[in-house]
Image (cartoon, rainbow, N blue to C red; front, side):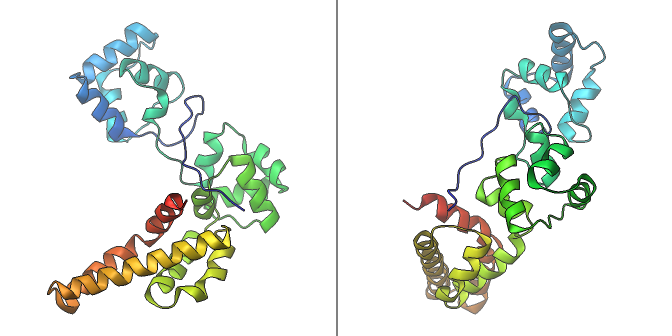
Length: 237
C-alpha cells in the first residue's frame, strides 16, 4: 500500500519549473532592484552577460534561469535553489527533477525509448500497472503525483464527487483502484468528506442562503474535491 508523503525540494536536482513569483517576492523582501540582482550575479558568480532585463524576464516567467544562473540567483537572493523551484507537474518535469534522461526512464519501466518519448511529449501515460509502479519508483512519485502523472486525476475527481453527493460506500473500491490506499484509511476519508460536504450544504440552507447559496457553496467544495481528498488523507492518523 502507498503512503502519501509531502514532496520536498532538492536543490541538487535540475529541471523542475522555475518559481518566478518566489524570485520576485524574495528580491522585494531584500529591498533590491533587478539591477542590484544582476550586478551581484555578474560580480560574485562570474556571469557577465546577466543584465537587469534578464532578471525581469525571469520574474515574469518568460524565460527561466538554468544551471549556473539558478545557483547564482539563489545566492544573491540569500536562499537555496530549491526555494526558486516550483513543484513538478508533468511527466517530463518529474523526470527532469530527478536528473534522468528519457532513455533512463524508458529502460527502468520496460518501454522502448520512442514509445516513452511519445507519452512524455503528449503528457499521456499509457503504461501497464506494472510499468506504472516502476515509473512511480524511478521518479520517486508521491501518490498524489502518481495519480496526476498517470492521468487518473480527472476520473478521481468524478468518483469523489459521486462519493460526497450520494453514497460514499459504493465508491470505495473504484477509488481504491485509482489511488491504492489502505481500505480502512480510504473508508474513513470518504466518510469524513461526505459528512463535510453534506454539513456545508445543510449549514448554508440554515443560514438563510437558500438553494442558490447552498449550490454555490457546494460547487466551491466540489471544484476542489481532489485537494480536499489528499488533505484528508494526510491528516489521517
